Length: 248
Image (cartoon, rainbow, N blue to C red):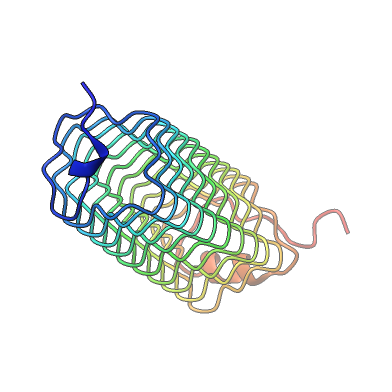
């Protein structure tokens, strides 16, 4: 049974309610209790969900363009194919949330917790994930082109075939991460830690590698237009470094 729109207000308790396909554009649900609430395919453009408790909620294919989700609790929330373009998710808890296929272009996720989140094929085009925690997340095939990922934690994450064209990844942690087939061309990788990471077939053309650490990383088949990757990795025991002059 659907809850009347008049009950939708800051701090409201709407746990378990069915608000699927509802028009909630611009509504204020800040600090609301929304555990397991159904928002599937709802219009939440520009809605205020700051500090809302959305653990276990269903936001499948919901439109959250420009929504404020600052410090919201989205633990294990279903955001499959949700639209979060230019949404604010700073300091949000997205632990084990399901965002496969979602669009977070130009969204901000500064300090967000994405630990073990499901992010396959997510679009982070131009997004800000400064200091975000993506530890052990599944992010295969994601698009981080032009994104800011300074100091982000990707330790143990699956980033195979992900794209980071022109992204700023300075000081990011990729220890034990899977970056096989990833496109890091033109990316800023200054001070990144790739200890024991796998970068088989990754593209590092034009990437900035100043101070990057490749201790025991697997660099077999890495594509590079300069000897930087070979020199930086060869001194710390990386495997499979290609000859950048091969084929010339």
